[in-house]
Image 1 (cartoon, rainbow, N blue to C red):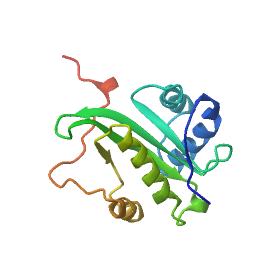
Image 2 (cartoon, rainbow, N blue to C red):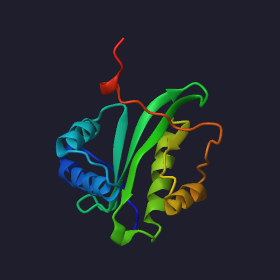
Image 3 (cartoon, helix red, strand yellow):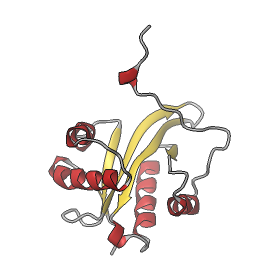
Image 4 (cartoon, rainbow, N blue to C red):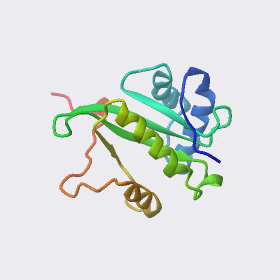
Length: 155
């Protein structure tokens, strides 16, 4: 199986939301269907801050990569963040993930993205090996910090 990639559109919503739900279930992310739809549908409709790529045949994708965009002076301009990357468990270990990652990274580089980031579970050695083989490196000086703005402290 070749790791074809396709930019997901609103026509792919059902397939994408199903895979996102499976990813969230696999990684024990307790998010509602409404939450997923609110986060995914704008990307399928062309929101400029992100994109979702389907992996495999458009009608029967075997995974997806969600990329979000920002700007970093240190990185020279547009940077991206792999927000979610999931391949169906039954086809893992066949090189599909690496091939899809390469195709998406190539397309993003050609589109003017200068730098890519991702976060990976500290205990997920398999995913870390994949990303290291591709060329991602840990930034030892930095670590990711996050804040839920819905819980913003009152002034």
